[in-house]
Length: 384
Image 1 (cartoon, rainbow, N blue to C red):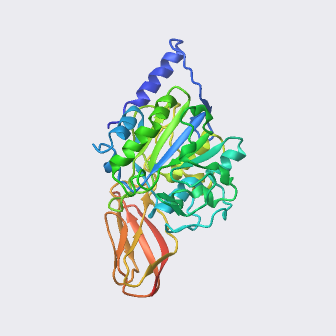
Image 2: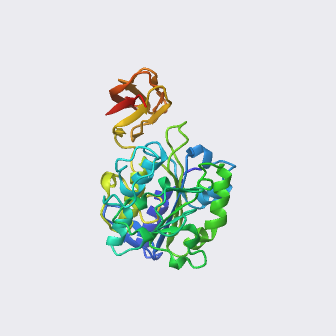
Image 3: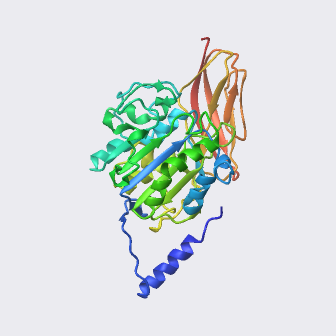
């Protein structure tokens, strides 16, 4: 999908408007807190899918409906997840940080009070909810139930987000979308989010359940966003992200974006504060018809994974994640215990460690312009 000449259209519209030849009207309030205007939508619905590379979705015959949404809307061509495995990415998207989460184990519900998108929206007088397929009941903080998994639902971790905002997907107001909160997350179950089932299962699910909202959003100052938590560990963590609805200019959009960028975008739409790393992230603006521009690639940065733990002679996988810079990015890591190696192209550290103790790892990312970024973190290998 090729980007369309947005800037030319906007310049022409501005010139004609100055001559009084056209009138420019919009139902969306523009917020200009970051030097770029963003629509302030009546409703935003964000759907999060699982574990697929960009190319497994965009342009794939296995995802015809999602590609229809991408063609009618805007698709980010440089979007990357920040880490592996799944759960830390959900916390990054919702709160701008992993909050110390490094794996997919169950967190303690209502135990955190860090700033997050739900808390910020409520404080700003807006409304927030999540619709979680398979959740046993509204406000349930259970870890697992059938195909439901708490690890894909970070909102239950925060005591500053009312537990009752966590709803079942059966409570999604399919017959009256005006009853939706200002912003909501929709999380399919482990099959329909593509985690345990094929891409086609998720594509069919989104069409069967949210096609009506996607169409309605275009004429009701509302927005549908599809994104993924991470890739399948076999690439550079590039993921698909699609915007569809009112005030979206169709086409592909480049630029170095990540989950912090999405969080910053939603915060700026409603003039809230900024949680964690969203404070320094670049919001997504060029997908909208309100005059934003895409960012340059930006300085190369390598996220610090924080303390990591593996077990002796057990399979261990760690993911390095660089942002910015000029592609392609190459990775290396020193200080690794015997048995672990780093993939230069993908930044994945894998293997079965044959040494125990705590090792100080130095990871380096180098881009095509020979810019480098370094991150250091401890890796502890335990016997059991």
